[in-house]
Length: 491
Image (tube, rainbow, N blue to C red; front, side, top):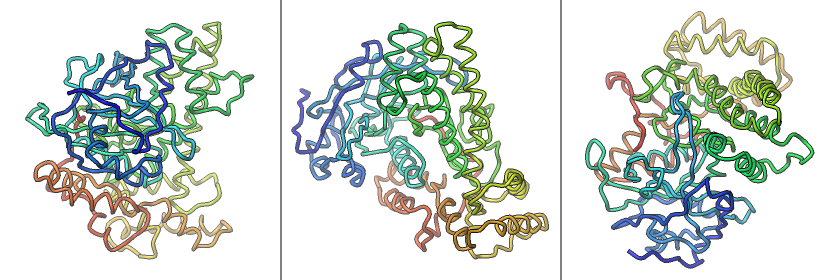
């Protein structure tokens, strides 16, 4: 199939700044055409915000771009090279099934990567077919858009297109391509790759590019690369604190899945916690619980240390001094993270100011929730409402004592009870992507080509902080008789 460049009526306004980095960071490629592209779901609101014409993109010509059969005007498709620590082990990686077709310049003067995921083989495929199955691509669409609605920094999903081709995994599955948008795809692992296989000049070019794209306010006369490290520490602390706030478990916090922009990326074995338990892990491959909910803050620090190591040649000309600078910056992470976590948790409890006992107040509630197997989301939402629950955790003497402490604490702040309730309702979602609801939607879509269940779920998740009658059936956990929930890396 001969590829052609489409016209500009779709609204594409692409730049290719990443391709102006040294050649070592990418490979220029053409997308691998698919046999029979069919649009499954399209994000009209996201398209409009990016200056794209939804009607044109939903046409046959537009879908051909989203499938990788054609490329837009101004596109220079590339596969990015990177490395990463996967479950603690360092390895060479790269875009094994994805192509960056360009960077869309939006009407608000922002720049977003446009990436086709599942677009076929690249030099980094490591024996894989470079394709993706429909189920995992729809899963990423659902979860990433839910995360956006929850107010958590994330890559987003523009469209999913069925390819008309089959991918072979354990069984034959329908193939699909996801169009993903991101502030960038600069990963911790991109810097690890540069430090291991590039020159110092290559590493500097990458760091300068990252600074210009994500941290333009950092002054030239500062130690710019230390400032870069410090800003990434801050953003990662904020991101992980927000994950903890809503009970999100990423599932595979390898360094190649951590972005320097502070956006959540790669929704493979991710899931949301029902019953509160910090040891909760869903991924079938995480048998040691490395990436369990309660370990996410610690792993964040470990990953940041790997990022700092990659920056050592830029932090100081003297190796020993560079290590000292990096260690001092990383040593600040625990306190920075705890501060961000407490900010998030105070909001969940309607606290506007700070008191020294706030940490124990939060932790004591979490301990009670674990002891009584309370639902994480519903417990905090119940505290946000005027409804007095009289079952489970809420019917215990221990909770009554904690509740009295909480009431005394809120009574010491100047804000009204109504303001406190509003703060809580703005930060305690009524609905999250419950795992069984996501699986229900994916099963209907993949097995029956019934996309109505998924569309309804996405509609409910679009307003997670507004309680409505339509949300009621989406607020309960799965039936315990179904056994433990397990997720798998989408391949």
